[in-house]
Image (tube, rainbow, N blue to C red; front, side):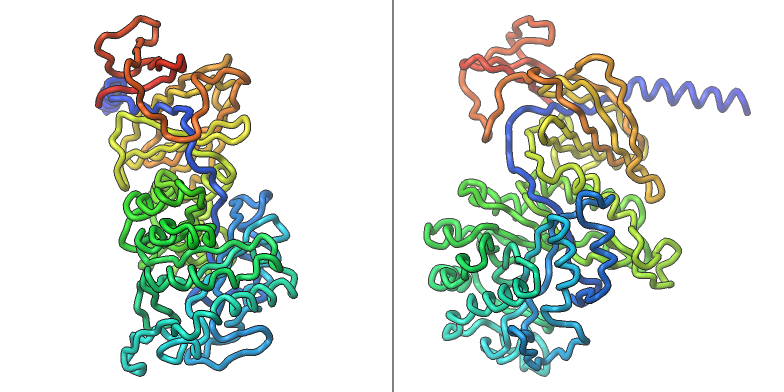
Length: 505
């Protein structure tokens, strides 16, 4: 038995030695700067937390272990100023604007961002006379839309929400036009076509009182699958484009590298932020998520960044498959009420380190794809260079990082299981380096955080995707000119700048 065990070790070592390394080359091309990460102030059926502020205390602020900084709340349809308007839903108290106030105050006190989304305007503004979306037998399947004669009431209604929150100590940072305008529902909802949203914004968005509510920004409607038709129509017209500060959407049925990436093209062209404002991964389950499902969540975060996202807001803040436990015994053990769950720590890889960072370009010898076996992204923030590497394989892989700047120190933040999260591993760097090789553990989330050595960048920082000039010259890593470049090379451009590139598969 001992000989067999020794032979297995030898074979494993030989296999590792011959494993093909994953190569990631980080270049100095600059993309979006990331505003942050967050979740919705609710734990079921958009029911806000009321006086229970423990979830936001655990999750928000720079001293939190998770570091969220954006909170989404509903602008409920049955509350206008200080008057509760009876509605079809008869939600339990506190289903109104005050239900999110205690949480919003804490998020703002901790330097965070609070924004509101209407699921529906008041029912008497709508074609079906109710806040309900209309897709229900008791509504006769009436499509609930904002009546054209009430368009002029919509933004003044949002102003009443802003006024209420301001009087109660919360300066709201942004308001959205509509949650999922393309999803016909039997709960609170309102339908808009892209043209209807365009008309509303073009003719009436000036009524949002930006002068009184300093700094408030307007978010586009948030379509179910980030349908770019909603935001593209707004971006193509100067009048509507000037009214919209953030384009937004959800990811249901459409991964980040599809619709959201398409919608981000015009948004980035005109300097608008791109926020993913609702999605949850592997939530329709009767158990706590396993580690593979947590890695799928990490991949979604990473793919959103690659798609041009500047803000990622998860769905429920408190749920057995979310960030904070509910205490429901059928999901125990591990679902202790108001205790952080593994998914929160997975989020922290991004929220603690990528918030405020600018994404850098990357190239790899692994093809980019949704939920690939390996994914990566890179960021710069101050004197920190951050590289994210997600390996979902059963065996792990050697990883070679080629960096655009010399680095003088580093730390690896690593998560490998639901019970092995955010382990800090010092990286031994004896002198400034531009390359690092590391063997990733199986099914691991790895965040490399390097300190840049001053004045050692290769090439010049770019503000957008560089065009490939003609007559580039390529050298190997020893400085010898190459007639047929392949693999890892130094590319010299006609303007004299250089960068490391990987050519070939």
